[in-house]
Amino acid sequence: MELTPDEAEYFSLLVHKKNARDPHEITSISRMISSLRAKKTSAILSGGGNLEYFSSWKYPVIREYIKAKGFVRSPKEISKSLLHLKLGLTETRNALQKLQKWNMIEYDNKNGGYRPKNDCIITYSEMPHAVVNDVKRSLIETSIHSLENFEKGARNISMAIRGMSRETYDKFCMKIDELRKEFLESDESTGKNDHVYTLLVQLFPVMKIDNGSEDEMRQQ
Image (cartoon, rainbow, N blue to C red; front, side):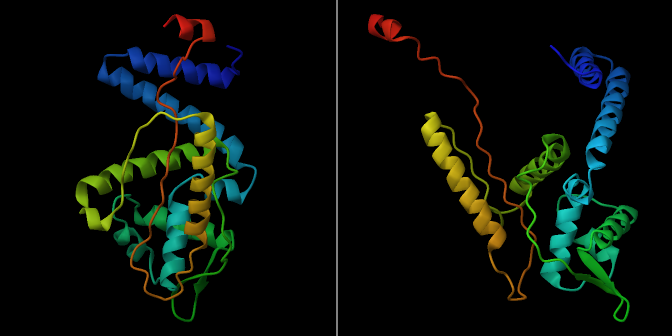
């Protein structure tokens, strides 16, 4: 399969976990998988702060919360404001320190709290899959939690399945990119923000249609 040593080990662990039946063995294999993933991710993140910023949901979510409020007094406020995702006070403080280091927020010593500093728009589009996969997985899980715990008026989650050509697929990809851009650039400077939202739009194949050759089609 031409895998690197780390990739081969990761693949082997996935196979063992799939075939394992003993709960203790499954737990042990899961720890090994997490350790190997952390090793791989650490190598990727050594490239700079931007990569690490996107490696966890906590950095963009906390940054956007502070940006939306304009001023946040304590890590406890941030931790308590999370609706689905969970973050302890120590992790919140560490995330705030990283955001300060990356010049995205600043601490207001006079008033004793955090303020937004960098207003640039940063997107996930150029990030390696290994960096953002865990973030996407976490946010997909929170969408399920939102679906189960919020009334329809408080969330907008829908799904559809249909067959389409590659040309139609490409058109929808363009529309999704336009929607994401509009979402990121929407101006909410009214001071009336009441939530931090995430936009999750996914378009991917679930079946392959084999139409056969022209001769086969004529025979049918």
